[in-house]
Picture 1 (cartoon, rainbow, N blue to C red):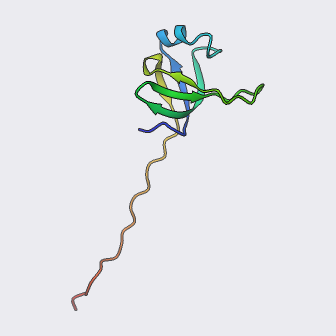
Picture 2 (picture 1 turned 180 degrees about the vertical axis):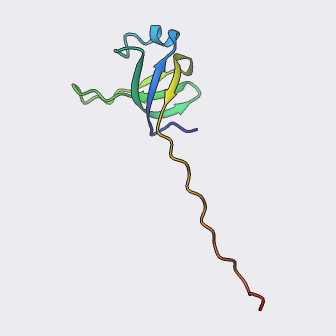
Picture 3 (picture 1 turned 90 degrees about the horizontal axis):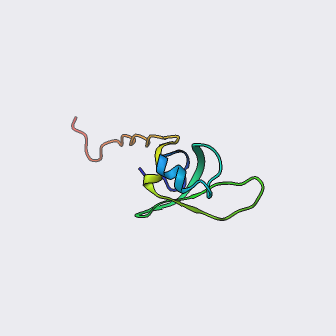
Length: 88
């Protein structure tokens, strides 16, 4: 599932909480926008009410234990009428 462009709620793994305690303040969970995903992990942006920050943070996959987001299933394909001659 592609997470780029989605707002995701993350829960830290124990190693992630320790590794990111200075970069991400707060408790054991946080919400962020996934800007890009690649082999290194997820590049996330966290809106800051106090600053107009454009800084992104790398969140390695082993740094979070769980993630939650809104899922929208794809639309079912519309049935198209058959093409050609109809038998009488």
